[in-house]
Image (tube, rainbow, N blue to C red; front, side, top):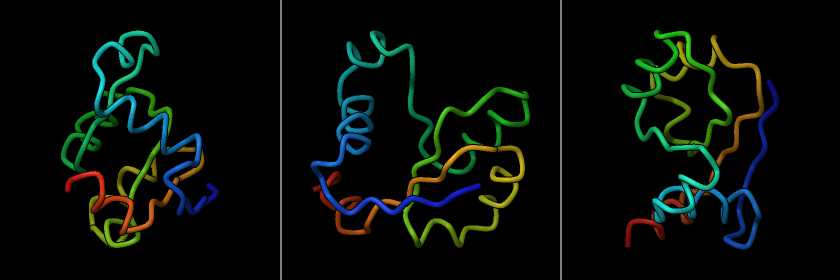
Length: 90
């Protein structure tokens, strides 16, 4: 597993994530959705469903449930700067 830090709102990964979060038409076009919170992530992996990407913050990496999710995940983990995460909700 590799960890990739994302600190710019202009990063294509951030733009993609924002599109998925904010636009139902974009989610439909991409055939993807967003699971927010470790409880939804755990439920997803318990059903043996594939995760395409994991986006998190540094603080959230310390959540005890994230280890259970990461045990079932083989891709890159994208760590979003706390300031970008806060901007998304303000």
